[in-house]
Amino acid sequence: MASVLDHATAVILVGGKSSRMGRPKALLPFDGEPLITHVLRHLSTMFTETVVVAAPDQELPKIPALVVRDDVAYQGPVSGIYHGLNASTKEVCFVTSCDAPFLNLTLISNLISQISNFDVVVPFWEDRYQPLHAVYRTSCTPLLKDQLDRNELRPIFLYDKVRTRKVHEDEIRRLDPDGLSFLNMNSPEEYHAALQLWESRMTDPIAVSVELFGVARMVAKRRDVALSLPRDATLSHVLNALAERLPELRGKIIGANGLTAGYTCNINGLHFERSPSAKINSGDRIFLLSADAGG
Image 1 (cartoon, helix red, strand yellow):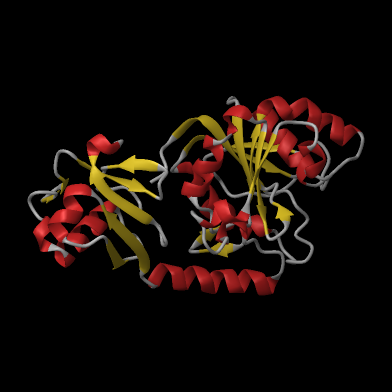
Image 2 (image 1 turned 90 degrees about the vertical axis):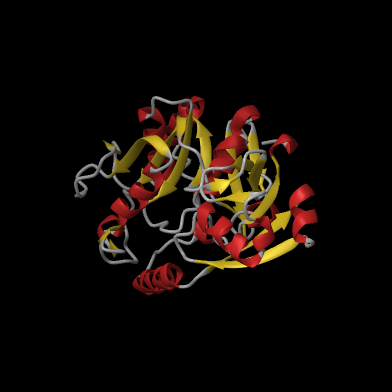
Protein backbone atom coordinates (compact mmCIF):
# COMPACT_ATOMS: atom_id res chain seq x y z
CA MET A 1 0.00 0.00 0.00
CA ALA A 2 1.31 3.43 -0.86
CA SER A 3 1.58 5.74 2.15
CA VAL A 4 0.04 9.20 2.44
CA LEU A 5 2.57 11.76 1.21
CA ASP A 6 2.75 15.07 3.08
CA HIS A 7 5.83 16.31 1.22
CA ALA A 8 4.51 16.11 -2.35
CA THR A 9 1.71 17.63 -4.43
CA ALA A 10 -0.34 15.86 -7.09
CA VAL A 11 -0.74 18.07 -10.16
CA ILE A 12 -3.38 17.14 -12.75
CA LEU A 13 -3.42 18.86 -16.13
CA VAL A 14 -6.87 19.22 -17.69
CA GLY A 15 -6.45 22.12 -20.13
CA GLY A 16 -5.73 20.32 -23.40
CA LYS A 17 -7.75 20.94 -26.56
CA SER A 18 -9.30 17.42 -26.68
CA SER A 19 -9.60 17.97 -30.44
CA ARG A 20 -9.51 14.28 -31.38
CA MET A 21 -11.95 13.37 -28.61
CA GLY A 22 -14.44 16.00 -29.75
CA ARG A 23 -15.44 16.98 -26.21
CA PRO A 24 -13.59 17.93 -23.00
CA LYS A 25 -11.83 14.88 -21.59
CA ALA A 26 -12.09 16.12 -18.01
CA LEU A 27 -15.89 15.82 -18.14
CA LEU A 28 -16.10 12.37 -19.75
CA PRO A 29 -18.16 9.94 -17.62
CA PHE A 30 -15.94 7.29 -16.06
CA ASP A 31 -17.13 4.77 -13.50
CA GLY A 32 -20.13 6.95 -12.67
CA GLU A 33 -18.33 10.28 -12.31
CA PRO A 34 -16.46 12.86 -14.43
CA LEU A 35 -13.01 11.64 -15.42
CA ILE A 36 -11.25 14.45 -13.54
CA THR A 37 -13.16 13.49 -10.39
CA HIS A 38 -12.18 9.84 -10.85
CA VAL A 39 -8.48 10.64 -11.20
CA LEU A 40 -8.51 13.21 -8.40
CA ARG A 41 -10.32 10.91 -5.98
CA HIS A 42 -7.74 8.19 -6.60
CA LEU A 43 -4.76 10.49 -6.07
CA SER A 44 -6.33 12.13 -3.01
CA THR A 45 -5.95 8.86 -1.10
CA MET A 46 -2.18 9.41 -1.20
CA PHE A 47 -1.62 13.18 -1.54
CA THR A 48 -2.68 15.80 1.00
CA GLU A 49 -2.32 18.59 -1.58
CA THR A 50 -3.76 18.45 -5.10
CA VAL A 51 -3.62 21.07 -7.84
CA VAL A 52 -5.65 21.03 -11.06
CA VAL A 53 -4.36 23.15 -13.95
CA ALA A 54 -7.10 24.21 -16.39
CA ALA A 55 -7.46 26.46 -19.43
CA PRO A 56 -8.50 30.08 -18.72
CA ASP A 57 -12.26 29.63 -19.24
CA GLN A 58 -12.52 25.85 -18.93
CA GLU A 59 -15.63 24.41 -17.26
CA LEU A 60 -14.97 21.97 -14.43
CA PRO A 61 -17.19 20.16 -11.93
CA LYS A 62 -16.89 21.06 -8.27
CA ILE A 63 -13.74 19.32 -7.08
CA PRO A 64 -11.78 19.26 -3.79
CA ALA A 65 -8.58 20.69 -5.22
CA LEU A 66 -6.87 24.00 -5.85
CA VAL A 67 -7.71 25.01 -9.43
CA VAL A 68 -5.24 27.27 -11.23
CA ARG A 69 -5.52 28.56 -14.78
CA ASP A 70 -3.02 28.77 -17.62
CA ASP A 71 -2.24 32.37 -18.61
CA VAL A 72 -2.67 31.43 -22.27
CA ALA A 73 -4.81 28.54 -23.47
CA TYR A 74 -3.35 25.49 -25.19
CA GLN A 75 0.36 26.15 -24.71
CA GLY A 76 0.94 22.47 -24.11
CA PRO A 77 2.16 20.49 -21.11
CA VAL A 78 5.12 22.75 -20.28
CA SER A 79 2.70 25.53 -19.37
CA GLY A 80 0.58 23.17 -17.29
CA ILE A 81 3.59 21.75 -15.47
CA TYR A 82 4.90 25.27 -14.80
CA HIS A 83 1.62 26.53 -13.35
CA GLY A 84 1.16 23.37 -11.28
CA LEU A 85 4.63 23.54 -9.76
CA ASN A 86 4.24 27.27 -9.18
CA ALA A 87 1.01 26.69 -7.21
CA SER A 88 2.42 23.90 -5.04
CA THR A 89 3.43 24.54 -1.43
CA LYS A 90 5.64 21.43 -1.43
CA GLU A 91 9.13 20.77 -2.75
CA VAL A 92 8.07 17.92 -5.02
CA CYS A 93 5.18 17.39 -7.46
CA PHE A 94 3.85 14.34 -9.24
CA VAL A 95 2.40 15.55 -12.54
CA THR A 96 -0.18 13.68 -14.59
CA SER A 97 -3.08 14.36 -16.95
CA CYS A 98 -6.80 13.93 -16.41
CA ASP A 99 -7.09 11.17 -19.02
CA ALA A 100 -5.02 8.62 -17.09
CA PRO A 101 -7.60 6.47 -15.26
CA PHE A 102 -5.30 3.56 -14.39
CA LEU A 103 -2.75 5.31 -12.19
CA ASN A 104 -0.79 2.95 -9.95
CA LEU A 105 -0.18 4.52 -6.54
CA THR A 106 2.62 2.10 -5.71
CA LEU A 107 4.50 3.10 -8.85
CA ILE A 108 3.91 6.79 -8.14
CA SER A 109 5.22 6.38 -4.60
CA ASN A 110 8.27 4.57 -5.94
CA LEU A 111 9.01 7.38 -8.42
CA ILE A 112 8.73 10.00 -5.68
CA SER A 113 11.07 7.99 -3.44
CA GLN A 114 13.81 8.36 -6.07
CA ILE A 115 13.77 12.18 -6.20
CA SER A 116 16.27 12.73 -3.35
CA ASN A 117 19.32 13.21 -5.59
CA PHE A 118 17.47 14.42 -8.69
CA ASP A 119 15.32 17.27 -9.97
CA VAL A 120 13.17 15.13 -12.26
CA VAL A 121 12.23 11.45 -12.13
CA VAL A 122 10.62 10.42 -15.41
CA PRO A 123 9.59 6.98 -16.71
CA PHE A 124 10.82 5.83 -20.11
CA TRP A 125 8.15 3.51 -21.47
CA GLU A 126 7.96 2.02 -24.98
CA ASP A 127 10.90 4.14 -26.17
CA ARG A 128 9.35 7.40 -25.01
CA TYR A 129 9.68 9.65 -22.01
CA GLN A 130 6.44 9.99 -20.07
CA PRO A 131 6.54 13.64 -18.89
CA LEU A 132 2.93 13.51 -17.69
CA HIS A 133 3.65 10.66 -15.32
CA ALA A 134 6.73 12.18 -13.77
CA VAL A 135 8.04 13.78 -10.59
CA TYR A 136 9.46 17.32 -10.61
CA ARG A 137 11.07 19.48 -7.98
CA THR A 138 9.40 22.86 -7.71
CA SER A 139 12.89 24.35 -8.08
CA CYS A 140 12.46 23.58 -11.82
CA THR A 141 9.85 26.34 -12.07
CA PRO A 142 12.20 29.13 -13.31
CA LEU A 143 13.61 26.87 -16.03
CA LEU A 144 10.11 25.98 -17.20
CA LYS A 145 9.24 29.67 -17.32
CA ASP A 146 12.32 30.27 -19.46
CA GLN A 147 11.19 27.48 -21.80
CA LEU A 148 7.79 29.11 -22.19
CA ASP A 149 9.40 32.46 -22.94
CA ARG A 150 11.47 30.76 -25.67
CA ASN A 151 8.43 28.84 -26.95
CA GLU A 152 10.09 25.50 -26.15
CA LEU A 153 6.88 23.63 -25.46
CA ARG A 154 8.20 20.08 -25.07
CA PRO A 155 8.92 18.99 -21.47
CA ILE A 156 11.93 16.91 -22.53
CA PHE A 157 13.91 20.10 -23.21
CA LEU A 158 14.10 20.45 -19.42
CA TYR A 159 15.70 17.07 -18.84
CA ASP A 160 19.14 17.95 -20.22
CA LYS A 161 19.32 21.02 -17.98
CA VAL A 162 18.67 19.37 -14.61
CA ARG A 163 19.51 16.19 -12.72
CA THR A 164 17.16 13.72 -14.37
CA ARG A 165 16.51 10.14 -13.31
CA LYS A 166 15.38 8.08 -16.30
CA VAL A 167 13.32 5.14 -15.02
CA HIS A 168 13.64 2.24 -17.43
CA GLU A 169 10.92 -0.13 -18.55
CA ASP A 170 12.24 -3.15 -16.66
CA GLU A 171 12.03 -1.15 -13.42
CA ILE A 172 8.49 -0.04 -14.18
CA ARG A 173 7.28 -3.55 -14.99
CA ARG A 174 8.03 -4.66 -11.43
CA LEU A 175 5.13 -2.52 -10.25
CA ASP A 176 3.01 -2.03 -13.37
CA PRO A 177 3.62 -5.05 -15.64
CA ASP A 178 1.32 -3.87 -18.44
CA GLY A 179 2.15 -0.17 -18.21
CA LEU A 180 -1.48 0.79 -17.65
CA SER A 181 -0.28 3.88 -15.81
CA PHE A 182 0.59 5.33 -19.22
CA LEU A 183 -2.70 4.48 -20.91
CA ASN A 184 -4.50 7.67 -21.85
CA MET A 185 -7.40 8.51 -24.11
CA ASN A 186 -7.16 10.77 -27.14
CA SER A 187 -10.08 9.54 -29.26
CA PRO A 188 -13.61 8.17 -28.73
CA GLU A 189 -12.31 4.70 -29.62
CA GLU A 190 -9.61 4.85 -26.96
CA TYR A 191 -12.13 6.17 -24.44
CA HIS A 192 -14.55 3.27 -25.02
CA ALA A 193 -11.68 0.76 -24.89
CA ALA A 194 -10.59 2.22 -21.54
CA LEU A 195 -14.14 1.93 -20.19
CA GLN A 196 -14.28 -1.73 -21.18
CA LEU A 197 -10.89 -2.39 -19.63
CA TRP A 198 -11.95 -0.68 -16.40
CA GLU A 199 -15.13 -2.74 -16.18
CA SER A 200 -13.23 -5.98 -16.72
CA ARG A 201 -10.62 -5.07 -14.11
CA MET A 202 -13.33 -4.26 -11.61
CA THR A 203 -14.96 -7.69 -12.00
CA ASP A 204 -12.07 -10.03 -12.80
CA PRO A 205 -10.03 -11.41 -9.88
CA ILE A 206 -6.43 -10.36 -9.38
CA ALA A 207 -3.42 -12.66 -9.16
CA VAL A 208 -0.68 -12.24 -6.55
CA SER A 209 2.15 -14.43 -5.34
CA VAL A 210 3.43 -15.00 -1.82
CA GLU A 211 6.95 -16.17 -1.00
CA LEU A 212 7.58 -17.60 2.46
CA PHE A 213 10.83 -17.17 4.37
CA GLY A 214 12.32 -18.57 7.57
CA VAL A 215 9.94 -20.21 10.02
CA ALA A 216 6.95 -19.71 7.71
CA ARG A 217 8.68 -21.72 4.97
CA MET A 218 9.72 -24.45 7.40
CA VAL A 219 6.23 -24.75 8.86
CA ALA A 220 4.48 -24.76 5.49
CA LYS A 221 7.15 -26.91 3.81
CA ARG A 222 6.90 -24.84 0.67
CA ARG A 223 8.31 -21.64 -0.73
CA ASP A 224 5.77 -20.03 -3.09
CA VAL A 225 1.99 -19.74 -3.16
CA ALA A 226 -0.08 -18.24 -6.00
CA LEU A 227 -3.39 -16.67 -4.94
CA SER A 228 -6.46 -15.39 -6.79
CA LEU A 229 -8.13 -12.56 -4.88
CA PRO A 230 -11.10 -10.19 -5.29
CA ARG A 231 -10.48 -6.96 -7.15
CA ASP A 232 -10.61 -4.84 -3.97
CA ALA A 233 -8.16 -7.11 -2.15
CA THR A 234 -6.29 -6.00 0.94
CA LEU A 235 -3.54 -7.67 2.96
CA SER A 236 -6.32 -9.20 5.05
CA HIS A 237 -7.57 -11.05 1.94
CA VAL A 238 -4.04 -12.32 1.31
CA LEU A 239 -3.63 -13.63 4.84
CA ASN A 240 -7.07 -15.25 4.91
CA ALA A 241 -6.47 -16.98 1.58
CA LEU A 242 -3.01 -18.04 2.68
CA ALA A 243 -4.36 -19.50 5.92
CA GLU A 244 -6.97 -21.47 3.97
CA ARG A 245 -4.34 -22.81 1.59
CA LEU A 246 -1.77 -23.48 4.33
CA PRO A 247 -3.70 -24.07 7.59
CA GLU A 248 -0.47 -24.94 9.39
CA LEU A 249 0.31 -21.20 9.40
CA ARG A 250 -2.74 -20.42 11.53
CA GLY A 251 -2.07 -19.35 15.09
CA LYS A 252 1.71 -19.30 14.96
CA ILE A 253 2.11 -16.87 12.04
CA ILE A 254 -1.37 -15.78 10.93
CA GLY A 255 -3.73 -14.81 13.74
CA ALA A 256 -7.40 -13.91 13.81
CA ASN A 257 -6.66 -10.22 13.19
CA GLY A 258 -3.66 -10.43 10.90
CA LEU A 259 -0.03 -11.38 11.33
CA THR A 260 1.07 -12.46 14.78
CA ALA A 261 3.79 -10.56 16.62
CA GLY A 262 7.20 -11.06 15.08
CA TYR A 263 6.09 -11.35 11.46
CA THR A 264 5.66 -8.86 8.63
CA CYS A 265 5.14 -8.68 4.88
CA ASN A 266 7.21 -6.91 2.27
CA ILE A 267 5.40 -5.75 -0.87
CA ASN A 268 7.35 -6.03 -4.13
CA GLY A 269 10.64 -5.69 -2.27
CA LEU A 270 9.85 -2.01 -1.68
CA HIS A 271 8.24 -1.55 1.72
CA PHE A 272 7.16 -3.49 4.79
CA GLU A 273 3.50 -3.78 5.66
CA ARG A 274 1.46 -5.26 8.53
CA SER A 275 -1.81 -3.35 8.22
CA PRO A 276 -4.66 -5.71 7.22
CA SER A 277 -6.32 -2.84 5.31
CA ALA A 278 -3.30 -2.26 3.03
CA LYS A 279 -4.40 -2.33 -0.62
CA ILE A 280 -3.04 -5.15 -2.78
CA ASN A 281 -2.71 -4.79 -6.56
CA SER A 282 -2.70 -7.36 -9.32
CA GLY A 283 0.78 -8.75 -9.89
CA ASP A 284 2.05 -7.86 -6.42
CA ARG A 285 4.72 -10.15 -5.00
CA ILE A 286 4.41 -10.47 -1.25
CA PHE A 287 7.20 -11.75 0.98
CA LEU A 288 6.22 -13.18 4.39
CA LEU A 289 9.11 -13.09 6.84
CA SER A 290 10.20 -12.41 10.39
CA ALA A 291 9.89 -8.78 11.44
CA ASP A 292 13.53 -8.69 12.53
CA ALA A 293 14.50 -9.24 8.89
CA GLY A 294 13.72 -5.58 8.24
CA GLY A 295 10.17 -4.72 9.22
